[in-house]
Each structure stands twice: as C-alpha cells, then as structure tokens.
Image 1 (cartoon, rainbow, N blue to C red):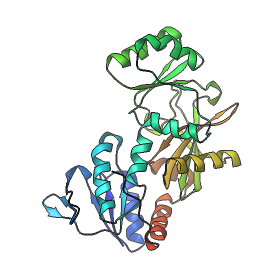
Image 2 (cartoon, helix red, strand yellow):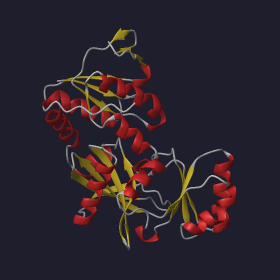
Image 3 (cartoon, rainbow, N blue to C red):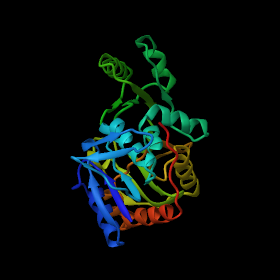
Image 4 (cartoon, one colour):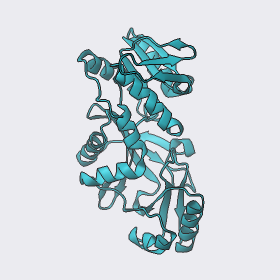
Length: 300
C-alpha cells in the first residue's frame, strides 16, 4: 500500500515507529506536514498539493495531527477522505474528541461515568460552579489544553475563584471538575485499536505534581485492568467514533471515571512500559480495513 503520515515533525517517536512498522511490512510511506498542504476543493476533480506538487493517490492516511493545528489539519484530512483514501481515525471523530466539552457531553449521553464537570460563561456563576463540582479542591482545565497544559489544581475556594476569574479574563473556555482525591495522582491509559484494548499502563505523577502526563515528568508501568475498565474504554472510543484512541481513566471509589479520550495517543510511553509493538498493531489494523475498502463518511 501507499501510506501517508500527516505530521508536522517526522522525527517524533510515534511518527518514526509508525513509518518503520509500515515499511517493515512492505508498504511505501511518505510523511507530509499538513500545514504545507493546500487544496483544490472541486467537486469534479478535488486535489491536494504539497510544496509545489500535486499529491498522488494514497491507499491510507495516518493522522498525527497536533491539537494546535486541529482546524487546518482536519481540513486536509477531509480532503484525503474526499479522494477516497482510508483514514485511521476519521476527521470528524478527531475534531469531536479535541473538543473536550463536546466529547464529555457525548460520553455522558451514553451513560459513561465521568468526574463531575461544570461549564459556565458568566463570572456571576463562579460560586455556584464551584459548589456544583463539590467545592475545593477542584481542577480547572482549558477546553483546548493538551498534555497537561492548561490544567490547574485549586486547593482552596479562594484559589479556585482566582484561577477561574483569571482564565475568564483571558476569554478562555474552561471546564471545572471535581478532584478525585483517591486517585492519588494516578490514572490508567487504555490503548484501544479497532474496538479492543490492546495495552494498558498506569501513569503516576511525579512528587508534588497531580498531573500524571508523561510529558510532565510522570512515570508509567504496565497494569492489569478490570473487565469494567476494559468495557468503559471500548465504549468511550466507540462513542466518539475513534478506531484508535487513548482512553484515560481514573480509579475512583465509585468506579472507573473517564477523564479524557485522546484521538492521537503517543506511542513511546505505552510501548516502553509494556514492551508491545503498538505501531505494528496499528499498521496491521490499517491493512485489514483498507483491504475491505472501508472509507469513512465525509463530514464537512
């Protein structure tokens, strides 16, 4: 197959691993920066151009689109879909997952347990918003944040009011969530491929930190998950329409709570902790889907 990887940085671990796995299985691979693509949106003959040349047809595209370029990256991915290219995670599912508020609403609609979450626009609602999630301590999150960026733990009511008001002063959209104390700075990352959890790790925040993201100095180890956690992870990925997803779960006293669903999960931490070849699994899944001629519906 001819496979294109959409990535702004071909040197990143995940990109390198996916390229190597695809080439090892006999596929031709090209890494393309989506920001350098431009498109002819023509119903008769749509095309994609890249640095002065028209791109040929590809059998499959692997989107590794960072959150900072979701809008344009998704537009480029839609163009590949318009040309009949199979996409590992369709554009509509990626944009759905990147909107934290929308994704949480979709998960809640399906009865998937979440941390208690509040969202408001008016500063007059700050006090009620804090009470809504059980008071301080609580977590304030930027809707557009990623890798733990824009996530703040407010340990007192006064601190919570200050953080919420500061973010609002910047015209930022925020979520306010309960702080699940019993998680103790740990969460579970479940890697879902094609409706199956193929790997799971427990991420532990570094000392003095509550965010367990590996980019923030957290550590990871292989972990066994319960049947309930497995079912929740699979349902969460399916709810957002993702074939590949990193589902982050908190182990609360009342059961597993889905914290976030990542549409472009990094491979380094989970491959290192588990010793599994996740990149190989992803390429094998693409082969199965592309061979059956399965292409996502175009949602413009």
